[in-house]
Amino acid sequence: MTEINGISSSPGYAFGKAFIYRHDKLVIAHEHIDVNSVDKEIEYLESCFSSIIKEFQKYLDDAIGDSEKALYTVELLMLEDVEYRKSIKKLIREKHYSAPWAVEEATEEIIKVISGVEDEYLKERIIDIRDIEYVVLETLTGKRREHIEVREKRILVADYILTSELLGLEGLENIEGIVLDTGGKTSHVSILAKSKKIPAVVGAVDFSSTLEEGETVIVDGEEGKVIRNPAKRVIAQYERKRREREALLKGLDGSIEIKGRTSDGKRVILDANIEWLEGVDDAISSGAENIGLFRTEFIAIKDDILNSRDKKDEIYMEAAHRMAGRGSIVFRTLDIGGDKKTEGMLAEDNPILGWRAVRYMLSHRKDFKAQMRAILMASKYRNVSMMFPMISGVEELDEVLSLLKEVKAELRRDGIEFDENMKIGTMIEVPSAALISDVLAKKVDFFSIGTNDLIQYTIAVDRGNDKTNYLYNPLHPGVLRLIKLVVDNAHKEGIEVGLCGQMASEPLYLPLLVGLGLDELSMSPASLPVIRSYLTSLNYGDCSRLANEVLSESSHIEIEKKVKEFSNERETRNQK
Ligand code: PEP
Ligand code: MG
Image (tube, rainbow, N blue to C red):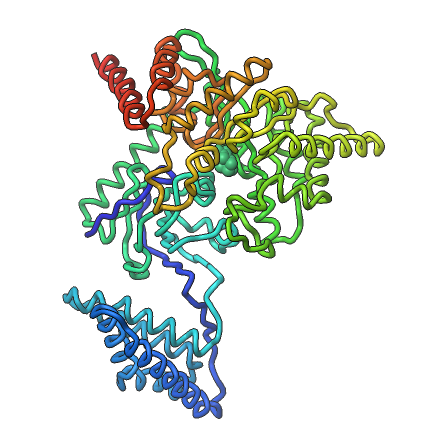
């Protein structure tokens, strides 16, 4: 049993067999060859092995250091192993397997034997054997692995995974948990895991390359831990934890219609972030007052992958309809690009600083206008708002607003009903937008602070990179000062300001956010019941004092100390 620490990215517990997906894997077709082609297939196999051996001999000659030399020596031994080659050829000759299929089958057989041996050294060689298998298969087939299909309940363990890959994965419903070697808490794959209620741990460095397919793994999405080959006793513990968590969430069932309020009556609207139409139901059952953020890009990416048909009009209309009479719904226009690229989007040196969100959409005006039109049409239910992501300056916002004006004029011309008073908001997630929020506040009806990005851009730290994750700190004084500035500027102009980043769903930060004066907090539905229950126990006066104290601090260490002290004191008081 081994325990690995990573970063908790989606809450909950999961355990099961691992399905490993590394970007160097290949999918092999299981094809029989013609009896007459057997000799040709074996000849082809031999020539591939010879060229790989030559290549590896060269790697060994050029290797620097003992460990690299040892690695190539072991791999060469395997490539030159007569028995290995014999077993492959036997499958081709006797069962008429194609060469790649025979390699896959023969290698599996060796791995099965080694896995059963009580010898740690030999077991560690499995990774080297896998490496050889990949190299041979790549040479034989000339292709790379790409299609992911999960047919049984599994824990997906991957080096990394693109949002589009996860969305296009066949058998997503079979994924019980996710472990990634890389990634950060607020990366979009983490957001996706959360919205699909899949417990996930990211930043589990190299985990996918040390694991074997089918090994048992526990994903502890609460503590950010992964346990490999757990003892029965530990699995039982986690079964209990999972049951307790389910009971707790049921107990906090949000169907009770309570508005967000502190114990002394300060109103804080509690809303949900969703990514799918089904999210509307999750939001309602979690007791969300409204949908504070509909990330429309996820359905757009998925539709593109699976159907090449865009169903946004129907989905927006249906979502607004389901929320009608309950609350409002904020559709954020496509935040595509960055770490949410789809096939066909240009590779960029710095995608996070590049052609993303409104920047991308302003270069694809036809698509942008089509989306605005669909949102406006859904606004006939009188509960819809539209919000723009990644606004960085006034000219950009003006350009977007003038496009919106054009779309409205077209709808009027076509006699299509929409809400003339539909509210328009902008996200504040770029520091420049926060700094000029006094100007932006004059042009829109509300702000929503996207801390996932605001933190990334303020501290200049990639939100998806585990190497620099230690710098990604919501309590950085620079970030807190920007939030305060935005709240003050919004209130001076008389508009509401919310916060919809991951920060809103963490109880530790709640008193501070309340004290900073945010009018609304929007989070994943799963986090809402806990936050609502905590909010009702807070005193606004105490929260304001905490915020004032914190704002005069210059180090995040001191700030963290104060925030933790606040929650510990409250806990002690409640226990008395
Ligand atoms: C944010 O940046 O905080 C946000 C809510 O937007 P996203 O996570 O989709 O980038
Ligand atoms: Mg964002």
